[in-house]
Image (cartoon, rainbow, N blue to C red; front, side, top):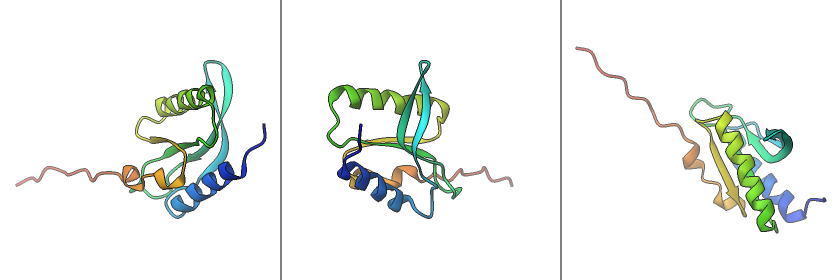
Length: 110
């Protein structure tokens, strides 16, 4: 199946939004229940202050595809429990704040 222009634009905008903090790769294979599927974007963090993430852009996707893509994201999350997953229809829905790691406060010794 060919990718729509809107779908490509969504992925490009997501990559641009994460530029400098993540190294996004398109169409990354993921094995779920013995079959291989493709994630739209897998974005490992290149900045220690940010979490890794996986993104599915849902442009003109039918219910079956959205459900299948969600299962792919959950399979990715299972392998990357500290990462974040996004199933979006527009790059504006990508919340960078969810990717920021919270500082770990250390106990002070006196």
